[in-house]
Image 1 (cartoon, rainbow, N blue to C red):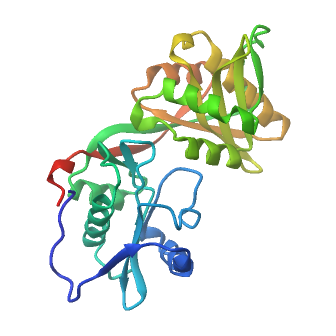
Image 2: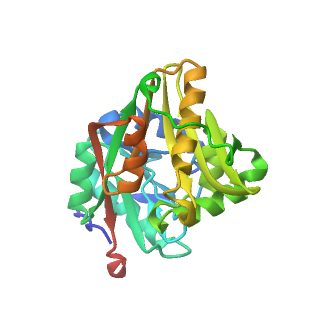
Length: 294
């Protein structure tokens, strides 16, 4: 298990599942921005309260630290949230919480993964024996300067409906390696939080999709997937162009997207349209030493 913790605490901490009654304490933890890691997804730490694999360290009925690390999708556990009170050891808290979560998994994941958005969290993960898996890079576009393809008359693109979710999950699981797949829960959450979501159909079959989020001034292409047999045929470019046209209609002036630095096919799609690398990047760290878990 990552790290192991030093016996520097003068008490035996109570480590228990987080419950909805911890909401006020979790809100307080979230106020310590330099001591909180939040995963880049749609669910907030507050929304995850009550879900499996969400634990807190409780001392004298005060939540000192908390972590959410569900196995979702199967075989991959992402650190969705971690935070600790000032004056409380970050390394010890991380080790204690992840150890307890690991002991209570119903199915042992093949890997534990996290995106290091902040420098202190990257250092913590390295101290906990996590190693670099990939690097996420950020690209940005002025939609009014985009090089958009002509609409393909043989390809139908329409908004996603709740009835499409199962097909979207199928496309997602075909398109991505296990570490990057979204579970049905994640797909439904992403859909419900999306400003715009669309599917591409060919002969009435769903062959690709995109989800996007938006603020009044900017939009973010949060997810783009095309079935492997049709990748390289311009479908991802058509879905991206459709999202850009939607963004322009609602007055968006900046669009961003993330992808892996070694995902050359995705980078080619985005850069061909006019997206440019911003220089911002986030390491994806993974831990596979589960055989040593106690």
